[in-house]
Image 1 (cartoon, one colour):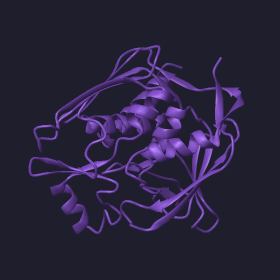
Image 2: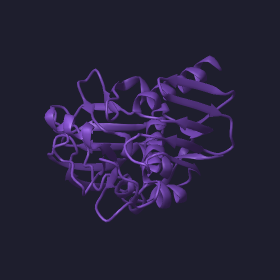
Image 3: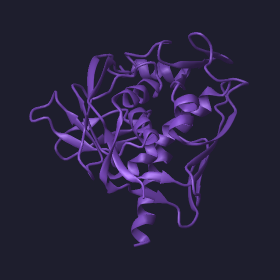
Length: 281
């Protein structure tokens, strides 16, 4: 029987947040069995908490935002959630002194590294695992997502943005701690320049730069030191899915097939998965 895990010791990271441009200090702490992933806003009176759970998602524009009645809210949780899901960490407190975690290099790699360095400690309760008892299907505009029964967690994904000749990409990968560390964790966030201009005009992306993002512009893919993988864009989309689907509150064990996924449909699928669990009881 697989057991729940938390981290072996505290771990910390500091850096600039993508949208606010403010410096943020983040600390992960071990948590008891059945706690889940709980974010704690130490900059707010009483350090209110919000659990990373699909029903707590309030916004999916450009990132995944969660909030609680306590007024605690956290923006851009997907990279942290992806690293925790892949590392099979079920219970942890994530303390932050701002609403948005550090963007680091735009990937989940630094978060996965800090979790690995903190160590993984097995706990005394069975792991909660989401499995597909029957196929599930979600469609929203150009996005299609299908979940099929599987003995492993695999994501198969195709994306196409129409910005460059190279942005139609495909990848399929079984998600394990090892495959995530090598093949998904390093993949950076990206944006079309036209969208970036709108974000800047709206006062967002203040912390964005070529140090933490890949830009699609006038038929070219622009990044510092080139792409980390020829299909880095689709790999990053898969990484986002690993994070967003952990909003089920369970480790996922299924084959997810996605065409042009994004945070809105990722979270919609997580809610559909929770509803399927409830219906099956």
